[in-house]
Length: 400
Image 1 (spheres, one colour):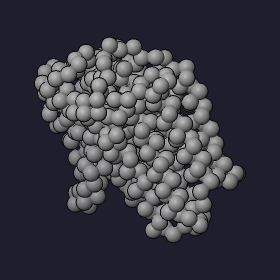
Image 2: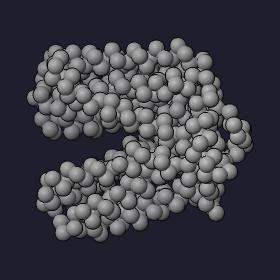
Image 3: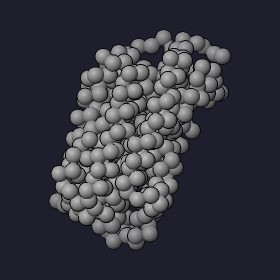
């Protein structure tokens, strides 16, 4: 669990450094706002990471084994690229800074691939809930340090040393990687690039209910994604100040998420994956009613606190069950590729799936918008009636 917490921290730390935090640095350097806006495009490696994930299934570094070896390599490359980004000059060469940021995003996405794969082979089925909880907590803490922590540091030291400090934290994670436990599995890795690319798809789609699994993964978190998609504009419409939003939504929301993951991790072991998906899925869906009540009441600070705690607490619980389910259905032979593909479906829902949210809100208003966010939990839960048909992966098969 300590190893999983550490890998979660290492995955969460770099995300904002090539995006939101970098935009803050460029803005502070008076870079043109049009260029600052384009920085969001450097995150494309996160959405297409499945393209090179088969290489990490097929090949094994000559040290530390297939999973830990790749983790160490990607962390080393990530640390070096963060140092390079820190010593870039966004005010003079903004596009060169953006190019280096692409490398940061690439190595960060590559680390995510192998960290997820490592978790699938390390964790026993009875530990899925705790493992998902620990990973999410580590990820959130890393993300907090690279956002709020980095901005605070930048008030006292030059930006380049902020990025060097973040690289040193990745270096600390590299030391931890050397001592992480070695996963034990009988699953044989792919024997060729063709197998690494083709067999993960064959393995997944030969299972009973594979299309249902895809539909379920796409829909399960749609309710939370819709509820949170326009949360900041909603709170501003309710006449809350930016300070209120920052303190309650970002700070209190973070602690509520961590609390939700701890609660879910504790009880998921007892409940099992299926019951956890049912219970936590329903809880995360109904939590949207709290923001519906806030929309009805208007500017009401106590209700803001209650709604935020409920939304992020319950959303954290649902995320643990969701992540645990994906962890349990990946074949350990192809865990890097399959996990990358399935999490790409998650990203698809979070981006393209909620892109019409603004049009929906404009048409129905805030109260009905949050009511709809509750209703859309139903399709995902309906698929759970088919859960018992979904086959477990055949871990030891050599070929199909």
